[in-house]
Image (cartoon, rainbow, N blue to C red):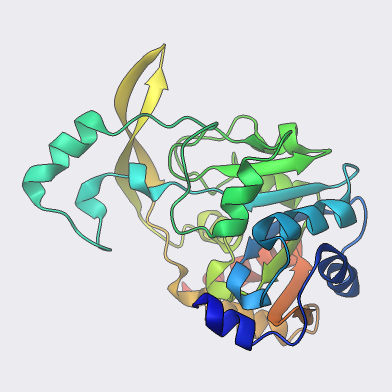
Length: 268
């Protein structure tokens, strides 16, 4: 959305204070563990932009809680899998040999949004060491959540998603749909809903940059909207607004368990 369209769609400027109040209105409280998926433009015009959103989240949850955001970096993936856009096959090996290795401090995200890019640069935000599917976290459980992220099956039992599940955390969809609900990938893993494929990415191994191949699940979020709509019928999702953005707030464990039941039923 262009800036003039954002201004035109906004009745009054959004601020740290208004966003803070809207977050509290959804039921977000001090001490919660919350994974956030967001669209900045959906909120409307904000005094302070992405910084104001991050500040409001931190103000509400506080350091007694934890904020998590996915910080995926698909630019480091194997170019043979690229489709938006694809690149010529004779480029593939050149890219594999030359793309810089993942560095959690500096590697940018791709297509994750301005709020995520802002959040990952904040003081005391930690990032898991996965070249493609990392997560950033701030607060009480940040170190625990980002530690020991498995290279293979990156959204599985040795991932930040599982740790959020164990902590009985929450999901906030801020202006985005269920297709952005990364936690349901944990449901895919638990039910074996997808096949394994070999992927690759550049990492630092024993101090040397290498192109590392590993097994990953062939994740597919195409069904996530259908799963989300059915889950919402249970009446356990809180809906509300942050500025102009339609938001959904739910327990991650309940959503993942429902997703697992959904995949098992479909695969019978």
